[in-house]
Image (cartoon, rainbow, N blue to C red; front, side, top):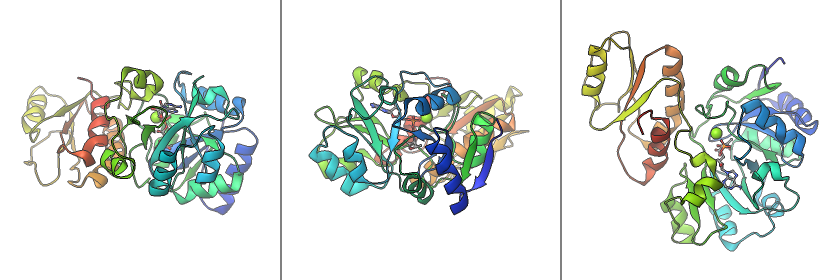
Length: 328
Ligand code: TXA
Ligand code: MG
């Protein structure tokens, strides 16, 4: 299959909508990462996503909708907390897990009784949802368990030949996947940290459980430890990282290093690659996956990441770095 990459203008969005209405797959940008969309109401269409990604069928999918009214229609109960959170954060990078309407095929929920819903903020995602008039099941547009794509070229290098179309909307602004919050348990449980922080959520609905339970893990296999990983072995180190990098260089290894900007000594990383990362958490999140993609294709032997600061705004970054690490 030929994979077309089209700039996401009105004509391309119309073509993409036609593919989706015909049960096909389209990759499109959201404010977090690129998604691989299919009609969420048709089992065969959704099966195409699992096939293209090589995704295990026990991992449920997020359904993207144009607005909160459509989200409420796809759930069998729309709790007060969902209404409050939707008012506060939608459109945006927060996914809410609620009881599923019987209209949702079980392939979407991996056989469970809950569905994950989100209203994306990206203009291309919004236009596509409105133009096709369908809810779109959309995981990140990459082969299963590799790093999520934040640019059209990342999607292409992972899924070329497996999908008919990629809408190119440039780099995604957020850079990390949405926060996933389970509203079917009390208190609500954070299943995946993301760009909306626990404190922001708690300011709206009160205390949530921040530690995903084992039940939560099985419920949300995206929580399984090694998940968002580059192919190159990656190690996240405390301090400035210089010693770890120097030790690997001394062994004759080519090192890809992600130090914190303005905090690192210039080392002579012979034949290596150094990409200084921003000190601001949102800017860091926006660049992390692109940096890991760059290091992965640069042919370095090892990746060293200087651990960023702790704190609520860094939670999602630390979560993804832990999952990307070879040494857990
Ligand atoms: O930012 C994002 O969320 C991106 C963009 C494309 O929207 N999507 C994304 O999808 O990251 P994916 O499939 O890579 O991750 C979905 C996460 C997984 O951890 C999955 O286990 C969890 O959401 N999830 C989906 N449906 C669920 C459900 N019904 N119950 C519990 N967890 C669910
Ligand atoms: Mg993913």
